[in-house]
Image (cartoon, rainbow, N blue to C red; front, side):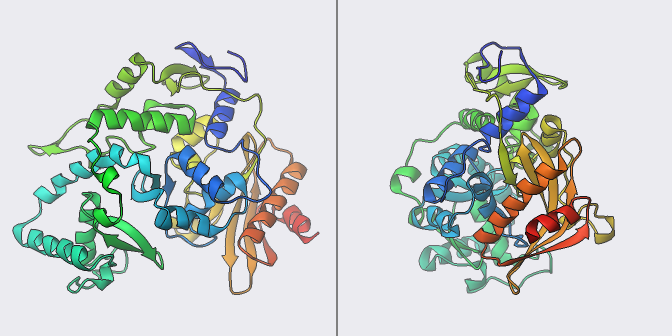
Length: 415
């Protein structure tokens, strides 16, 4: 196989550079950034990735807004909101985690909703009556937040301290008996599916679980470019523990290896070898590997490029940990650290914060990765930081002293 060619034969060997370029191009980082991005680019991001992870962290911007920016540059934040809540082209459900998903994935996730009935089977009678009452109230009054329930109960604690009403709504949501109709100040609004989705979508013929899983595995492979069976299965968490039923106290084993065998036999995936990998990898047939990738992107910790850290390490030789959940004294790089991709490698990482009161983009720390040209990285990174500031309507920069890239970056941003 040559670069800019196709993977045509099972067992073909990809170099490390091939794997990097294939992963970045498949995840959308090889796209040329337009002068002005909009709804079409957000739609393209969602279609390419198959899932945009939602997270409440708002240190810079909420996580779900960043993937489209990383690939296409500044765009109106309302473009994503409109695709989800106005046009209904995306819906909210559990994909990799809580995600915005293209509507065509809804039938492929019905098996996951049905599997959640296991949780319902273990609910006590009194709780079931309460949950049914919550469902009836949503059907009558929805869309509703958990706080708007007439008898939702109080929060049970400071951290994920859900009330009884919130727990009931989330179980109903996992089972597909309520859907997310919108958000108010990031709080979910629940409604019955008939008022959120079309009759055609809800009435579509069911997809058998095995067929749906295989379709999702192909979708994940196309998004990632290349990965082992475990890497790819984790993209949509196929057959994760919460998808496998417990029978007689024992959880059914995952059978993803069988699914991959069937996909290869059907010609929907191909096995390849990647230089330095112990396990076989998979690609979609005929996938094209570009000769080069000239990416410039600051990447959210919740981007699919970083979802599975072992995959990121294997492909890019890049170690990353979200240090939000690490006690302050033990953090190495900072609280909200975003990696910077340049070319086909991770070149730096920056600890960022948008201070909206002072209209300042704060760079608490900046670190250069090994084997990259510092001057080239500084110039490219400064350009991306200016782009973020423009996107978020921030008027100035404040660069701290931590990190081996902090001083030159401060000088570059000061020009």
